[in-house]
Amino acid sequence: PVSVQKAFYTKSSNGGATWSSPLEINSVSPEFKLQPNVAANSTGNEVNLCWTESSAGQFDIYYARSNDGGNTFATAVKVSNTPAAKEGQCQVRSGLNHEAYVLYSGINILSFTENLEILIAKTNDGTGFAPAVQVNSDAFHLHTFPLMSVDALGRIDVIWAWDKDGDGSDIHESIYHSRSLDGGKIGRASCRE
Image (cartoon, rainbow, N blue to C red; front, side, top):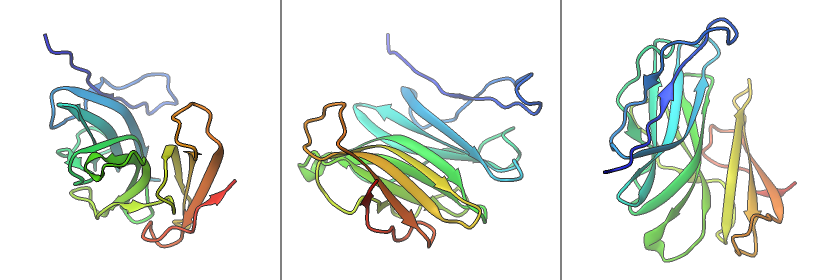
């Protein structure tokens, strides 16, 4: 038998006292959905979801948007078009003008390197994504555990751990930060915190 892992969305409109019936996140693959993440805009009517989907050993980031407060979601779209990718650890945040940002770590296994990068992609309407932009300013070793915020002025801040020696241990040498003032197009040079 094939093992399947599903992801669901539910919401509360009364501070967590009660919850809506779980709604299964639509998907492309029937196999595994991992690490789901959710963000709503300031009015709560736009709900953005991202998750990692695994199929035949490949891991890709997918996204779906609801324009009715999470009652229904549009068909899922793939965030990146990197062939032979291994992507994960996604986070989604709502922007100021109906855009959404998806942050994730990824590696292109066709590049013959083991460098895990931090990437950000943007959608304006939830139907497709601009090409992802690399957030970290170097190209060496393991960049992991990305976290993101989008403030009321539209500034995007990203932090992540960097395993500079690339040994894959759970001990990361530094936490790094980058800020974008232009909607994620160009990040400030990575700096150690």
